[in-house]
Length: 436
Image (cartoon, rainbow, N blue to C red; front, side):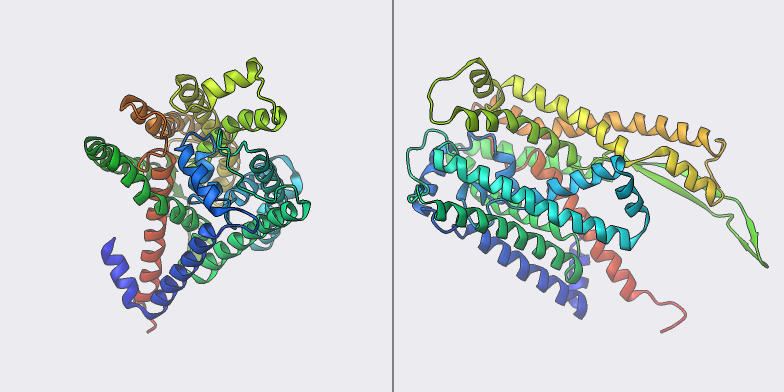
């Protein structure tokens, strides 16, 4: 890994791409720390420190690199774009027009990207409006009595806040695309990686200040978790595929052997995002419908006691089961065994011992079902590790465990993909063929 980066820095054009990417990341972090207009940064910091991680929005705050609970210009982070991308991807299965665009190649993908951008702006307007509404009502930071928006009675101030946060999401989307086009690639993923990595030093210091023994346990657990995640993320079932020889004109084509890789974690981190989104929706509904009233009904009491409190076993069990369900759901809509079997049959490919066509599709379904089970259990266990670890150590109030759950899944996945991209670009530049 270090050798790949050393070789990349020694290559002029790759060095330029890496420096460009670092410049974009610096701009992103500046926007994440810059308070939005009309927000009292001093009061926001006081409320955030008083909160101490007791917030159901911890995952969204993690993705934004702490920008959400700072009410900064980039408060919404990359979440609207992630949500929009997932929605468009799901709609390609439901809407025939989207499915046709997906099959049209680069032109169709460009159209789907345009739809994703429009949907991102719409979701950003909705989310920023809800965030500002919670801040005005004093419900964003729990029991904090500080006015995070001093001039909250001014409609103009609130509109400017919504517009600023929506524009911030648009800028983040643009920065991610710049990294993808002119940088080292994986633009959106790298921005999420940066946001998560920016919170590790502060969270590690908080754990160290509370207990040195706990910090030592966290470091040991982090190394074990990271090694395990790397092992599983690289694991795949390779199904052998052979292509028959075909005579086209005067030339013989085919006759090669390859394999179809099926990853154990075929769904990535998407099921975790789905599950966490569903878990924070009840709390959001309670906060928006309850208003300023202090009276609580049975539903709000249940939500606050069992769903919001992340050390609750109801929360942990619900989180785990939702992740398992969404893993099967997402793999089912993104990998179509029938289409893959038809493509193999079209190009003369077959799995040894399996007849082409329907038997191949049934075999792929069987194998996919076998490897999805351990993949879903792996995702669920890794995601709930912070809750279990901090609950067992008696620190159930602070759920910002920096080396577990979604943070490790994203950081390891993005890190591996980035290294692979750099190595592939190095191979393209250093490959010596017949032409020099």
